[in-house]
Length: 214
Image 1 (cartoon, rainbow, N blue to C red):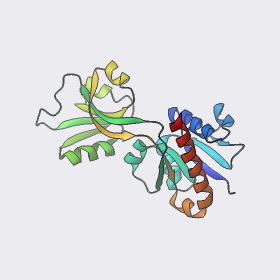
Image 2: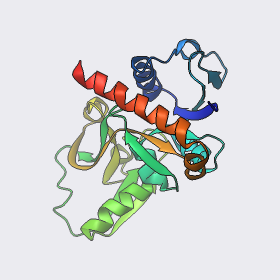
Image 3: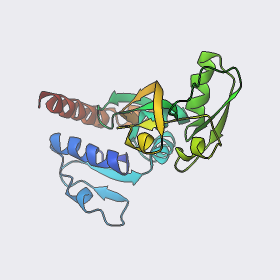
């Protein structure tokens, strides 16, 4: 069997993916103490793991340097690149939400609104569907600061528990999209390594099913 290479989003999603892999019977020992290494080989399955940031996972898969990737739907929606989105893994669940300062009547004015977000493309598309004219401001760090500082009227951001929003006097007023981790596959790799990739997909499906039964 040919050895596959899969890009895996670092951080919280990495831990949840490792748990899924172990349910699938994969030995993830190299990932428990990765040190500074960014590429790791699993000892009992022909796959190499590349640890990367979400947007880079998309780039690596699109350009074919990784056959597959595991990345949040948020990165897929924002970047909109060309690859196969094969499977919803059911992990990394959260949501895109529109949030404002508590007490603000966001929809009760006709003035043009300023929206801060790390995801300008997702934000623009959301408001275009509503037929609303908004100005989108890209923020790389703590987007919650934008309304507090008077830079924006609202934010669009990922929300898991809402604790960070509440701590900064913000409340979500509308969901933009539900988010979870997806398995993506390079289009050429799907043809060249179809047997190996489908074997991995079947193992993922079995792992998801096992988790659902717990």
